[in-house]
Image 1 (cartoon, helix red, strand yellow):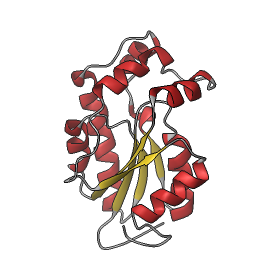
Image 2 (cartoon, helix red, strand yellow):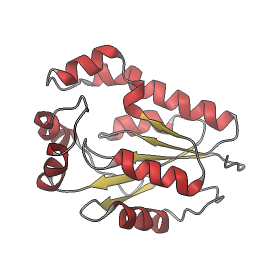
Image 3 (cartoon, rainbow, N blue to C red):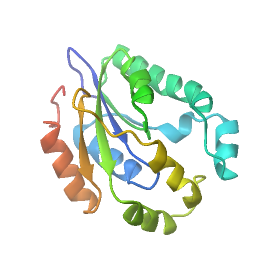
Image 4 (cartoon, rainbow, N blue to C red):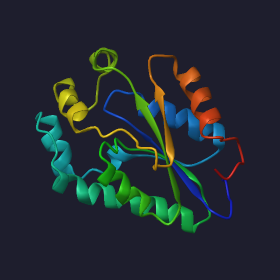
Amino acid sequence: MTTSAEPTCVVVMGVSGSGKSTVARMLADRLGRPMAEADEFHPAANIGKMSAGTPLTDADRAPWLAAIRDWITERAAAGESTVVTCSALKRAYRDVLRGADARVRFLHLHGTADVIGERMSHRSGHFMPPSLLRSQFDALEPLTADEDGVAVDVARTPELILEDAVTRLDLAAGHPA
């Protein structure tokens, strides 16, 4: 458990297939923090829509984002810094997450549609079909200069992505950031 005066959550964000789960797990292990997968917070209706190839609306995402925000707050109240995966495609979605009672930082895993589409074509057992990737890129609003976070290119190995993220976010095991 990582404790500090100000618990921090690193939200590993990006479109589906960008490597959020892989990088978040590696980051959580490296920092000794609990991790949550945003997919686990989706209500059944959202999973049904995505499985059927129907993009979610902002209204569909609202309770999902609130549940993730509340998880961050609950862990922070226990003095824990965390790592969570979440597409966080729009600034408004990131604003909801920033409403948690913790410092919320973003690690945007970005890449081209070709690179990410190729990765998606090789994974199995996920409810998000590759056909929805275009809608995610269309909705994506990259981090802006006033948002607490960095963007890292996913065209490298997960290990190199992790090293870049740890360096650029100034993270270290036991470090409060």
